Amino acid sequence: MYHSALDEGSSVSELGIADNDFSSYYQINDWDDAVAYHNGNEG
Image 1 (cartoon, one colour):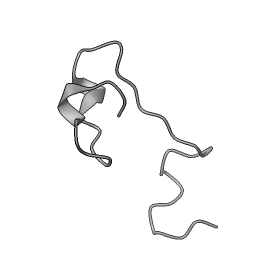
Image 2 (image 1 turned 90 degrees about the vertical axis):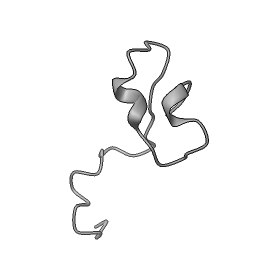
Image 3 (image 1 turned 45 degrees about the horizontal axis):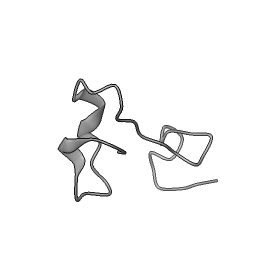
Image 4 (image 1 turned 120 degrees about the vertical axis):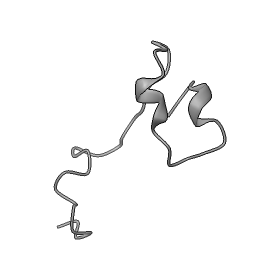
């Protein structure tokens, strides 16, 4: 998360999606938001 007080110091937390702060956001650099990778196989 970027700009979230709930996620400071953690690179894997996404608590900021529910922090009611419209300046916080998360970003993925992939076309998929982990839905297709549920079994750990990326291909």
